[in-house]
Length: 159
Image (tube, rainbow, N blue to C red; front, side, top):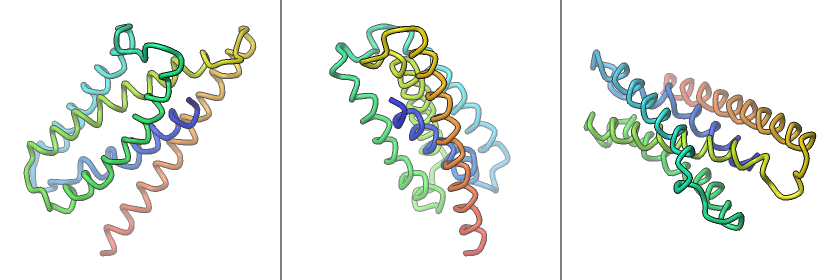
């Protein structure tokens, strides 16, 4: 779950807000609406784990959250294609923001919830350490994602 959590935030901060909101610079409202849609979808995704039917049914199916975290890589080519106007529709961007925001909220929250519930973590001390490691994985993922985003922006400005 630690890798899942870190990778989720890596992908999010790699694409949002630098790439996803800079798609239509001539539009006055695209970036504002895009950020609003992402944030609303993210909040819905974060509250979804409070509904127990959204959880993996058994301990053995926790891999679904890890797979969903790595499946979010699909947003990279989709957002980059859109960013370079190979898909010239603002509606597509809004739909991508809904999916991207919801998946960020849901997968990030489920990773944080299920991380301290892993096998072998059977007392409060171990849960505390697991929670701390989850926080560190968020920071590492966010840092790497931000560095990649800055590198991508620098490359885009040169070419």
